[in-house]
Length: 292
Image 1 (cartoon, rainbow, N blue to C red):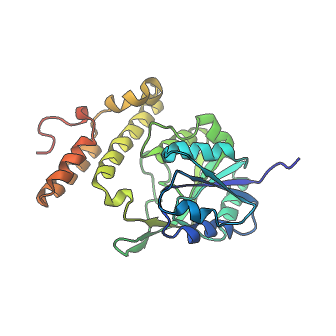
Image 2: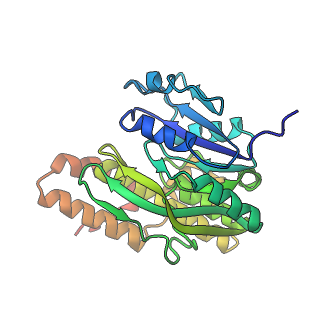
Image 3: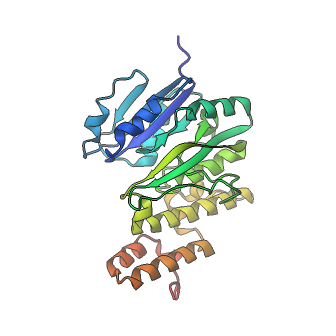
């Protein structure tokens, strides 16, 4: 009986057919490494499903959800269906360089105390046309040694299982929440060589005012949960589940983001967007004079 591949690579796809073939091929063209590739098609309606069916490769398996269930549930589903000792993320539409998986595999094999490893990332913004290398990996951020962007990371399945995988309450910041919990079992590593291209699409978080506000809320919750654990107190997400969103404090970072975002929208006269942004934030996280 086969022991299975060394690596499970997964992607979660929903309505992003632009660049689909190139993105998927960048994984299938990986060199000198044993892997399986699992794509969860989260009930796409833009033709992505039909495009995915055209790939003919024994390493590739497509799982189609009957209904859209979101990234986190789809990600947990993908990881659970795989068998690799290591799990590599590859976000929909992004590109992995041919030696990415091999170099991460070798790194984890040689550094047994490392629970996850990222690589250098190039960002391509399809809206602005800007292409640049991300420098966020340098130095600590959010209490982590390295600040991964998500799709470039490979981690140990055993540790992922120990911490319970991605937590479904996190609509955003689910990746940083996972890295924090993984890091309690070992080191986070980095291969500085640029081996991953992150594509910024028009419908991504960076270009959506409501998603940006929601991301700020969940990022705040992620940091609050990590702080409580580090200081020996119960994790509010484990205690209260979704109600933890209403227990988190207003941090300076969160308040600064909301204030700047609201001023920007109001200055532009975009009142509808300003209202929608406020509606995306739990009421108790705002106070009288918050935006003054």
